[in-house]
Length: 395
Length: 181
Ligand SMILES: [Fe+2]
Image (tube, rainbow over all chains, first blue to last red; front, side, top):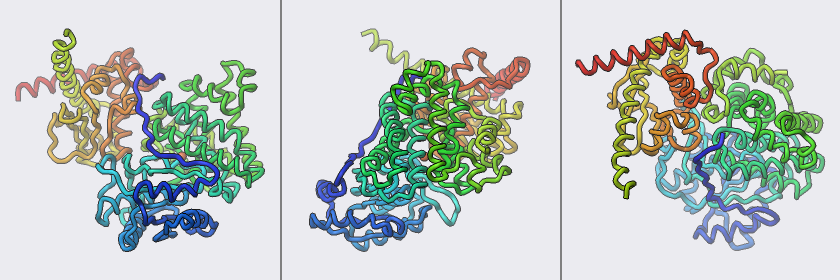
């Protein structure tokens, strides 16, 4: 499994901690940006999360020129074009995306249009099309899970053709990611749980899949430790600012890990399930993680065993014989899922979701085999393999 | 000093080897798609007329195959009749050599950033599985284990011997045909 060669890249400035938002004006000025536009969604605005961002800027004499707050959960080419039109009309010179995966992806796509010109975002779809840096772009995540603030990918739906357009370029990476605990304080329990399990899965897959490397390993293990230590205490005490910050940082660190070493079968199955049964991504991750690890176990015994240290701490790790650690890591993840189920009824099986039919498993397996992330899974996966994992995850 | 003198020879040998392997693989892809049902199950999902290319960047050797329908692949040599639909590109001749001399698994090469995919990733995933299947068919088991992530459990010896021989045979006749043409 050792890789003799790897690449690692993350040029995003991370601005994290107490009063992080107040650094935005200074950072914008440093990039000669004076007329920022905020891209966000209605939920973020309704939760009052824009107020501290706007206040932080106004206090420094920096005016937010325009706010677009109508990003849908699945952003589309039309939305991107509309926002780009407003950006140009208002003569903005930079973008601040405030939100979860969709708002961030939309911000990335808008940045392509306003930097490269034109109205047709589809033209820039694919890998390596962009050849120049884009406009100043900041991201303020309001969920702790996707890690989109440190990935060079955006996915936008082309409604007319009914396809999802992928965009990949290191120029999509924001100049800075601002991690402020105020932004995740009001996340409802089941979203806190599901998004944290997404971050956990990013880290576990980054650490156990084929493209793992020493640098991404360091980020992955640190992220797993933070989620393991903080998730349940945040579930019990949602206003715990320190715990919230730990989860937000874990999400960013897991994002850095997986964007450099990719993910595997949990994501292949999760993407397919999301597309077919419309289950939230984080929930799918939580559903499949232990079953996929069981499927992969003989190929990943060593790294998975190592994770026990970060999942359960040094006492449990040292008390567990080396030969049992991989299984113990899976048990630790199951235990965490049980605890989350107790606290917010986060489903642990496909049946518990009430939104998946047993007759759909075949289609999910079929679709998962076409997912790009399956290439990096440590074990080769046939359709029968995928189906057997799905059946185990069923009930 | 020695390195300086040897380098052009190594580069030349590497290039020749990669060119030859692309020829062999192209013909073998065509052959395997005619004799192996499991390969056809994968390739059938490709659109008809779909052009697949493997190339060494920036202008190195190429392999182009076309899906002509019902899972059958046709080898086009190194020139495509029209723009290709999916391209897997090695970043350097040295990386192509690592993979094509079976020192680095195809999946590992992807994981190690040795190659780029230009086109629909789901088709790339499919073609990687076809390449794995091909490698386990035409190579001795020991080498094949190094080349693919997992040696298929359902590839029994007689099947492998027979099909492997048939593929070699087909590759050979195809070579002869080319020489004659
Ligand atoms: Fe994810």
